Image (cartoon, rainbow, N blue to C red; front, top):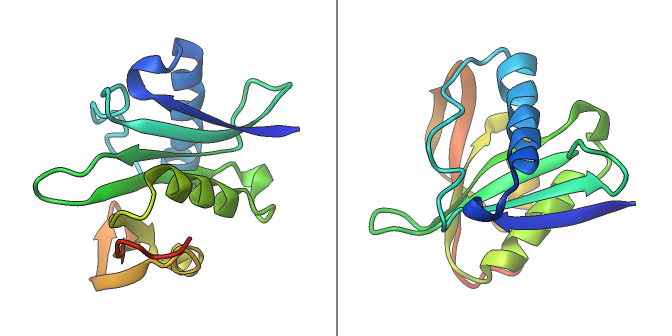
Length: 151
C-alpha cells in the first residue's frame, strides 16, 4: 500500500529528509547527469511543505515534491517534482500533483517544468509562460496555473 505523506520543513524527521533528498539527487543529479546545488536552504523552512508517496512497508519514497509559499515577487511555487525510475508510468506523479493542488487550493501557482513533462502539468491547468530555457543542461519552461483553475 502506498500512502501520501505531508510535512512542513521543520516537521520532517532526519530520516524523512534524507530519503527525500536521496530521491531527488538520484533522479536529478545522478540519472539526469545534472550536478546542481540541490541543498538550497529551503527544505527546512517553516513555510515549505513536502509531499511524498511512500510504500507503508518501505523506507524509500517513490515520488515527491515541495511547495514554496508565495512572496512579494511570485505566487506559490511547486518544485522538485520527481518520481523514482521504478515507479514511472504508474500515475504517481499525477496523484502527487493532484494532492499538491488540493493542498494549495485555488490560488495561482507556478513551476518550472522540464519541457518533455509539460503535458502532465497541462492536465492540471498549467500553461507555458515565456520561452523554454536551459537549466543545468535540461530544457525547462515556466508554467503558471491561474487562480481558480479546477484541478
